[in-house]
Image (cartoon, rainbow, N blue to C red):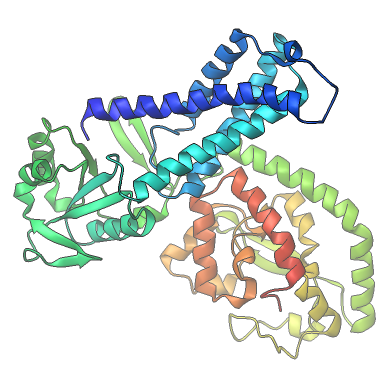
Length: 459
C-alpha cells in the first residue's frame, strides 16, 4: 500500500471516529429530552455550544491516537474493542474534568448518555471495518512476503495465519533451501529465491517484506534492505532466536544505536505500584470480611481430624525466591508432611479429609494466602505458586513464569484448575505474563468467582 493511499485511509478512519463522537454528543441531547429519567429539561438546557464539540473532538483525537487505535493493527476485534473502550473511558474522564472547569451546566445524565452512545457507535464502526477486511473486500488487506522459510519464518507465518485470517495475506516465502512451489505451511508456498526479493516484492504488490533469516545471513539482509530502499514497502526483521518470543521485549535508542531489551518485567514502574496497591486494598478488606469464616473453618478442621488447622508449604515465588505459603490443612496431618509421589492431584485421593474435600472444592483452603498477599510474597492474580521439587523438573522455558509474583488465582484457575496437566498450567502462566495488564487482572478476578462456585476442576 503506497503512502498517499495509506494516509488517505487513515484520515478517513480518524474522520469517521470524530464524526461519530460529535454525533454522539448531539444524540445524547436528544436522548436527554426523550428518555423519562432525571429532571424535565427543555431544549435550550441540553443544547451544547460549539466549544464543547470542539473540545470533545480535540480530546478524542489525542486520546485515540495515544492508544494506538490508528497506528497498530490488531489481529482480533476483541483486542481492538478493549483498547477502544478503555480509550473512550479515558477521554470521558478528561472531558469531565474539562467541563467541570468550564461548562458546568452540562447535564450529568446527558454526559452518561454520551459515553454509552459513543462507545456503542465507535465499537460498531470498528467492528464493521474488521468485518470488511476479513471479507477480503477492503484494499487495506495487508500482504506479507516472508524471506526465509525455516525456523522463525515458518513460525511467523503460522501465527499470522492463525491470528488474522482474511486481514493479513501471506503471499509466500523466498528461500534457497527448498524447491520452488514447496508448501511450507497452510498453503503458503516458496515462490522464489532470496536474491529475487526486490523484484518479487514489487511484482506481487507486497505491503510488507519480513526478513526471517539466520544470524549468519546478516550481510545478505543488509544488502536486501538497501536494494528495497526505493520501494514503497514496509521492511521488518525477525530475530532467528524463537525463544525471544517468550520474553517481554522493549526497543530502546541508546545514542542512535537501537537496543532490543530482553527480560523486561511487565511489572516495572507504575504497573507494579498499581498492582501492589490493589493487592493491599482488596486482600486487607477480604481478610477482615472472611475472618469469621476462617475461624469456623479452623474449628471444623480441628474437630474433623487431629493436627494443625493451618499448614505452611514451601513454594517458589518471584525470581525463584522461596517462601512459605499458608493454607488450611485438607489432608491427614501425616500425609501433609509427606511429599507426593506424582505431580498431579487425584480426585479420589484417600489422604484428603471430609472437611478438606469440601474446602478444596470451593478453594476455601486458600483463604490464608491473603496474608501472603499482604506480606508481598504473593499477589491476588498471578502464576500458580509451584512446589520446589516440581520446579527442579522444569525445562528452561518453563522457568520464565517466575518473572512476576505468584497469585491466589490466575489464568490457570479460570481455565480448568486441577483438570489441566502441569505443562498447560505453565503455558497459561506465560500467556498471563506476556499479556499482563490491569484490565486482565480485573477480568481474571471476575472470572474466578463463577469458577470457584462451580467447583469445576477443583479436588
